[in-house]
Each structure stands twice: as structure tokens, then as C-alpha cells.
Image 1: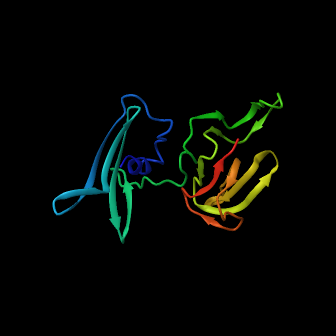
Image 2: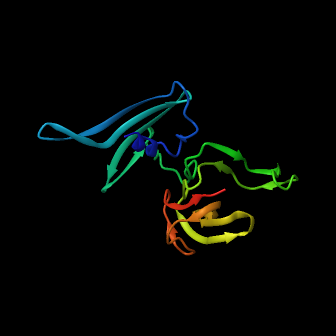
Image 3: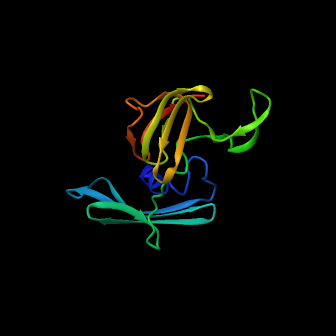
Length: 183
């Protein structure tokens, strides 16, 4: 149930780094019964999550066999990009045009975000798209490059290995595992 709620709010709340003491939630969920005995939870019908003083609300709506979650104004909670591609402990290096390189000991651009996570942690596509590169490339080590609608591209480097069967030309969906954390 907690994972379902985390998935609903994944575009607005990073459940590995944004949670704070005092956060709270409320959930309205289906209960599935057989002969009067509770068997399991069904769909989350609505949820509210108070995070850092900001209230996030979600309401399930189904149309044409497709269900999604919306806010009170009717805006879909699903966004083009996930907030983060993996479950991480902290950000070790931010995007910068002038970062002090920890190995080379010089200032140079760092056009990416580095996350600290356990080796082997799954890395997911933050947005659906097409694989344009999957393999080893220079300082990136094992790298996956995805092209997305509207001209965006995302790079996933320093991977220990790529997801099985991943290669250039393959489509991937948002949240699909594309590789695993390396160093």
C-alpha cells in the first residue's frame, strides 16, 4: 500500500529524500473481501500527503478503461519526467558549469547530477523514449542515452551494467529499468 502511494506521488515527492518528521498521509482504498473475510487491498481511490507543509492530493479517475490520478483542479499528477531515476541516499554532485573535479583537482563543467546509492540499485528511465546509445563511452563508463519527445535527451552514466536486452533503437517507458548503479 505504501508503494502504491509512493508511485502516485512520484512526480512531486521523492520518498527517499523529501520526507520529513511531521509529514502525514490519508488514504482511501478499496478492500477486497471473500465470504466476509478481508483478502487484500485494491485500488487507492484517493490519497492526501502532507510533505514539508505542502498538501498533495490525488483522486483516481477511470475513463475508457484507463485509470490515472488527478489533483483537485483536474490536472493529471503524471508528469513528463520523474523527479529522480533511482532510490538514492544523497546527491553527491550537482549540475554545474564550474565544479571542482575530485580526481583531476581542477574546475570544469559537470553537466549532470550524481546520486549516491548502493551498487546494483536499479536505475529507471525518468521519461519514456528511445534508446540512442547503450554501451561504454569514455568518462561515463557504461552509459544509456535516451531521446524523448520535444527534443529532450537524458544520459545515465557510471552504471555497473545495462538492463538485459537494452540496445539502441529500443523504446522504453517511464519507470522502466535501464541499468544498475555502478560508481
